[in-house]
Structure formats: structure tokens, C-alpha cells
Image (cartoon, rainbow, N blue to C red; front, side, top):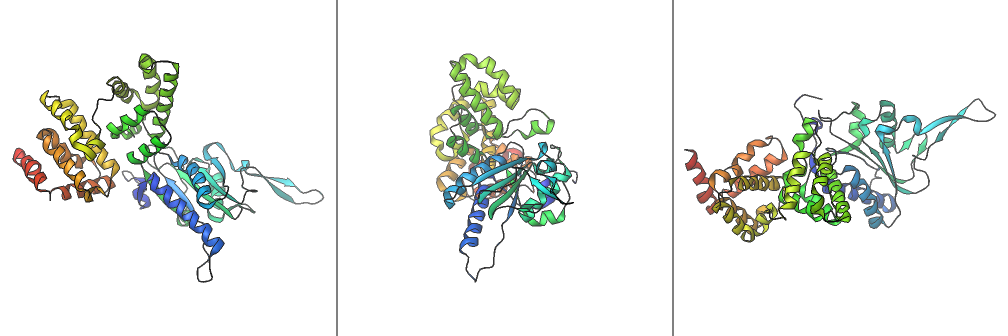
Length: 404
């Protein structure tokens, strides 16, 4: 790949959240089945579409394929079978082998149980497609493009999805440069989303400490910096593992009596730096201010912020501002600018907090690539806010006077 260019930029495709990607694929499959079953003469015969989901490791790509099966069963009222292929650990020979036909000089293929055969409806998932060897990738191209393997056709309502990590420097993958393959798939890039994670965490009953921590420190959902260094790093999948560990230690007794041992375990899941911070968060008994509360109900947390200001606790205030910016950028809530109450809460917050710390709200824009979705969203938000009289007078102009 081109040095310095992100894979999503190389492919020149849109980026979205994991939940939106799932909904797009779900709707596409439902519509395809409906048209195949009930299409009229005026409608062109539609073909099944193969999807390629690309995104950072641990973000939940494989998880949403499992969720798709469950949701498709509800939407269509049909039993969906699920077959998942782990590309790094299988080969082409695991799918079919030639067997001699008795009494002839010919042979026929014997197919494995990896290949869909009996159930009429199903999802065939090729996990980490680009980590398979080239012979496997070629076979999987056929599955994605033609809905069959060799001469064996998949049942009528089987759909194919492949997943991949991006072809960036952080990942060891072997991408086949295949223009035909690029043409025949729909490629969707998914990014980390705090909102998606929290919705999933609540639905799946993650431990309350994990949910509360990510609400408070959204920047710690995915530790991209540690990932780039080759360290153990926090990601949505690892936070689920943290949740499981908390439940296990609670089962053994009082969680707070086992924090030393828990610290050792968690450092091997989310790295030592974040584990230390997370343990401290548990010990503080959730006294931290959540960025989501600032947006939705600033008057509720304002007294705590004023207390921090009275005690000159600038370290906590600075962390809060960084977490607040991280929350806004991670959420990228497009309805925010039409919600007057939330806008007033944001304005009140940045006008209340000390100006030297509040300056991060503007300077943080420089931390993002100007081509990124984060940069676009945050710059639009700031341009919108400057139309607010209080924001302009008590924050923006005051900040400019400080700089002069």
C-alpha cells in the first residue's frame, strides 16, 4: 500500500459505524430475498450482493455477522444457517478433494461440510479473508462472486460476507490486487463508535463498571496509539473480556479485595496504563463526570465542575475536556446541532471551564487528519457554535483576546 495513505483512502470508499453497516447489509438481504420471491415483470431480476466489511481488529466485524443471522430470522421468518471460515487456519484442500469414480478414468470432487448444502437460507462468512493464502483466496473469490465453490452452487438464499483488517502498517495481511474482485463486492469500512459499543454493552449486559468507564473516558474505547506501537491495546472486544473478568472476580468475593490480582489480568487485556486508570476508576466509586452528562444535562454536573475549579484541580479538568472532545468526535451525532438544549449545555460547559483548559476545545481540531470524518464533523460543529451569541462573546472572543 502507499506509505502514509490509509486503506480507506486507497480504496476511496465511505466510512461508517458498525451498527449502520449491519443495518445496510440486513436491509439489502431482506430486499434481495423479497424481490427474488415476489418480483414482478417490471422489476429487473436482482442478483445477490457480496459484502466486504473492513475495519480495525476487535471492533466487532465478526460479531455483527452473528447478529445478522439472528435478525434476519426475525425479519424473514426463516431459519438461517451460519457457516464461518477462519481464513488464517484453513486451506483450499479443506473444502474439496478429488475422488476417483469407480469403473472410470475420471474423478469427482468430494466437498467438505464447510460448504452450504442442506439449509435453503444462510450466511457464509469468510473471516479475515486477506490472511488466507492465495489459493484459498482464489477459491473464496468464486464463493463471493458466483455463490459457489468449484461446481457446487450454494442454495438459493445463501449470502456471502467477508471481513478484513485494513491493509495498513499495523496488520500483517496478504491482499490480492484483484480488480474484478474489487468490482464485484460492496466494500464497507467501519470505524470505532462509542455509541455503538455502549448500546451493545447495555444490551449484552456488560459489567456496569465497564459501561460507566467508557461513558466517562470514550477515548479509551480503542487505544490506537498502543496498537501502532505493537503493545497490548484496548478495543471493543477486549472491553468485553474485561467485563467477563469483573464478573468472575465478583463471583470469587468482594471485587475491591481482588484489585491487585485483577490488575495483573487486565494489564494483559487492555495494557497496563489503561488498566491502572480503570482500577483507579473503580476505587473512586464512579465519582467521575461523564461527557454524555455534560451534553444531555450540564446543570446536573456543573456543581462538580465548579468544585474542581475551586480546588484548582486542573489535571482532572484537562482530562475531562479531552474526554469531552473525544466523546463528541466519537459520537458524531448529526442531530446534535438541531437540539437547542444540548447546544446550550455545550456552550455553558466551555464558557464555565477555565479558558486555558477550554482552549483544547478549539485546538483539538489539529489532532485529526483534515480529510477524516472526525475533522469534518468537529469543524462543522465549531462553525455552528460560533453563531451562538454566548459562545462567541464569552468563549471565542475571550480566547482570541488571550492569544493576542
